[in-house]
Image (cartoon, rainbow, N blue to C red; front, side):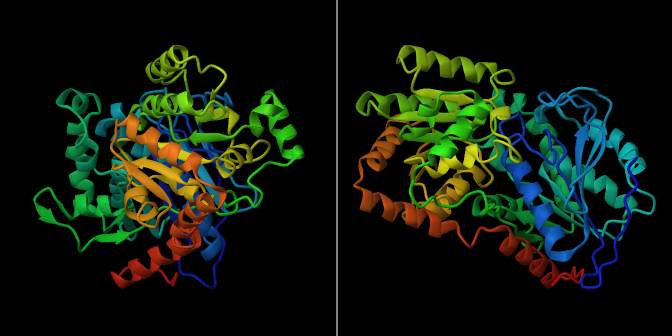
Length: 456
């Protein structure tokens, strides 16, 4: 156990905030694109850093451990500290010493890990606020509230089970363990002090769930963008130095980073429909011979998605025009961390064919980078924010022809018209979806609901 010294805080009554993101592979240095690892982890990490920086309190992120990280090969156990902050990531094992996809997590696995979590907390640990994520993190938070009754529990479901099951067949619902989620999600919803909605779709789904009206518990906690990483690039082209650095880091030809391109980024998940994005690009490529597609995918963990993508690439002879980055190619921090934002900033358009999103973090980052966005009706930030502002287009999921036409529209715009769309995309999410604004607003809403921790 890592003993952590408590720091006095004269300006804020909060001393400890606990964030729980149980599934996935959460680290101080996140690799987006790993299975079950993406927008939610970035959301949690950015929220944790902003809470620490605004209120000078100790922040701990709790994540399931007990298995080796697929890239760093480090056993995910114990507690790691951010070198610049009193911010910690704590990994705790359960009864299965291996990575478990969120679809296969059970209530028993989570319950049996509670005692190990309590033993790993430093002596005298008493969180003032517990902010849990998804149903599994919410269930862990519910158990921990029995031991920390003074804590305010805010549950952020991201994609409630009603949204999750809507696009799925009965067989797919079985595969995604919908029945388990329904059982435990209702319990968390009833017991949590407050429930955080990340979009209008989430709010609507939660407002009338399990035979009751929950609006009295719901507050808005939208995702935010790290504007230090994701912002418009003035010249829309990388410098020679940046091109050489990216090429050297990835051992790839420098020319690759100078191509006109569109991009698709998000976690590796069958519901992201990355193959549909590639299918849409294939239609674009028939009419625009000089455009390239960049996307990310963990091919070892999502072999079926990879198979579908490579089948399209081979059939359409796109081997030199579709480039797939693995998660380790796109680190969040340190060397190479500017590759992902630079690819997005210099794109002509961003596409996501996802059929399940609680918000759409990657699309929001693209908009904040001043890039037109093409997304499905299942991505709230596109339907509710970006497209209404004139910064993107909504297409139906699986409709690759409509997606291709939208991409072609943005590719063929004159520079001035394209820039107008790009400006609309940017202004639709900045400053409204920046982390400082969102965290301050979260604590204001908590105070208005009677949960005042002296943070406002």
